[in-house]
View 1: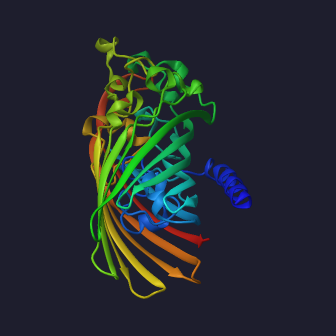
View 2: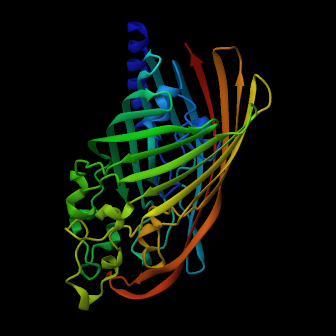
View 3: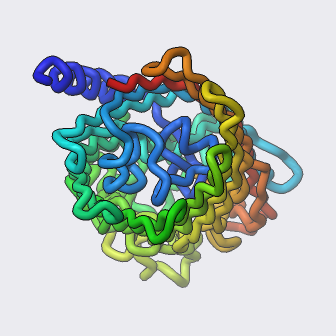
Length: 425
């Protein structure tokens, strides 16, 4: 048992180091559609259907239901980000490919009590425009890079044969970098010059919790619920003139319910409904309109100030649907659909050139194959269909004054392929 715990600790540390430099995932807003290869293959469901040792990311109660196991995976993620300003289309894909690792370990202390750890990336924002019109106020190379890493030790307890509860402690590390905002150094744009420096990546840390419950209401039927309060993160001090409230970038409250039905020995179907409250976090939710403030609006809050401009994101509801077909004792096939609201309104399109998280619909496919009774391989494929949002970008003259506006369309699509290995002990 000591060797198992040591292996889990070392693997978590390794995965933490591997995750930190590479995350970029903007799907359900900037949250991931699911938190393991198996879950993602079914549209991201997991609140009532735990499948592996990353179950705590969706619902920590599920860890008491997956048994003794270790899971590790890697996903190749490829987003395609575009901004059409006027009649010119600019690519936001200075970096096109991202590798996203995942890791989970779970140990049953007895038949009803488990201790585990799940290591994953919650999501992120990433963009880079090597060529873009200076008349918009953006410089070539403009973009952002937001990364979030969760290390979540968990405990779960099967309190009755039909009811399980769980608690995960979320240890969160995030980093951020912004480039190419120097052309905004104009008092007419209500931007503090301190927000325009590019000091490279700055980091932020916080601690939160996620709680959950799974109950079996009838033979074959399971229901689950999960809740994560807002996680208060330390400020990005190097970007205290960029994010509202002095560099604050908290992780929004989110909660959800799920249902799973094992129709027979071959078929399982599941659905989750999740609510993400982006509107709680000023730097995400505040309108970006202060960026467009004209001379007569000089009282508009500056970036970084209390009530300062943000991305203008609204709360979203996410619907996840999935099915699994056990084709044989060794092979299970999966498919799913993930739909989310678009958090970005037309009035905030321009600032979201930096973070165009506008995709809404994802088709997912997956499979698992048992190499031995204890070892299995899983894979998934996700396609997020292209979605667009229309708005306007400012036109600046050589003195940084707003002299007009141009139509702007943000669009994005995504593809990803993941593979994972699981070991039952």
